[in-house]
Amino acid sequence: MSGVTVITGGAGYIGAATTEELLKSGRKVRVLDVLLHGQDHIAESLEQQGAEIIRGDIRDGEARRSALEGAEELVHLAAIVGDPACALDPKESNEVNVEGSQALVADAKAAGIKRLVFASTCSNYGRMADPTVPITEEGELRPVSLYAEQKVGIEKAMLHGDFNGMKPTCLRFATVYGVAPRMRFDLTVNEFTRDLWADKELEVFGEQFWRPYVHVRDAARAVRTALDAPQDVDRDHRHAEAAQHHDRQRHDDHRVRVAQRGSY
Ligand SMILES: NC(=O)c1ccc[n+]([C@@H]2O[C@H](COP(=O)([O-])OP(=O)(O)OC[C@H]3O[C@@H](n4cnc5c(N)ncnc54)[C@H](O)[C@@H]3O)[C@@H](O)[C@H]2O)c1
Image 1 (cartoon, rainbow, N blue to C red):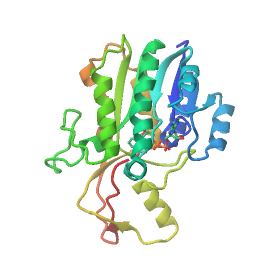
Image 2: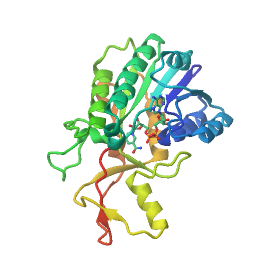
Image 3: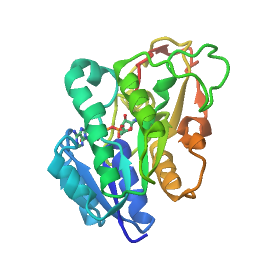
Image 4: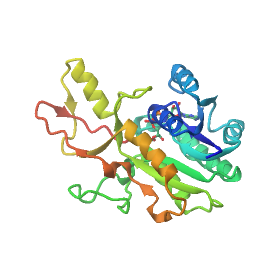
């Protein structure tokens, strides 16, 4: 591949692992990230590994255009992530997650990007009609939060729009866990691991709920696999669901009182 691969949110939890994975695959990687969580050290480390870093906001047209110059592939991870963050400032989450994504996709189309991978979420399935039956990509989407509603809306626009030859893939990530340059301890497995390490009792809400999980490095490999997939894969099969390939896990340890934390 001669062109550049752009990763928005490429210094985030999934993003930094994905940047490293795509650098290893021999790609020229350019990150567009506003470093919302103060990840300057991560940006510097990614730069040392060979990534180009643009410290900028996807809502900024100039930043988008310089990020997309000469690009061939786009991985769109940047977002206000999760129910609590979106509920805290619905206006900002709409500006970033919906309007920012729309503007980015329009610019990507104009720039002649060929492949687009969008970070969606398994939270799009929401409340399942029958929680005992595993759900597939064809399952009904019943989002129960603003965050998931925004992802469903963007997915629809991506999968049913006219993109002038650009191939969008929406990955409905399961809840991510595992060590990466930027850690998130608001995610169940990471939080439990930290609390066990600190010898704290785990608190579990809604022990009847099931959630799928995926390791952060597997999520990064899923992005790479989607980018490497043949161009002519049928569009209807372009919802690769990272959740499907990984164990569903149940918190049924009786020492534990448990928590259903919402969407990620
Ligand atoms: N971690 C999970 O369990 C999970 C599950 C499903 C889907 N996702 C999706 O994966 C993507 C990455 O999530 P994450 O867990 O790595 O979260 P994260 O918060 O670590 O990463 C998001 C990144 O986007 C950047 N960002 C935020 N607003 C921006 C803006 N306006 N312009 C440019 N950059 C901006 C942040 O600085 C951060 O680096 C998100 O789209 C999220 O919705 C994550």
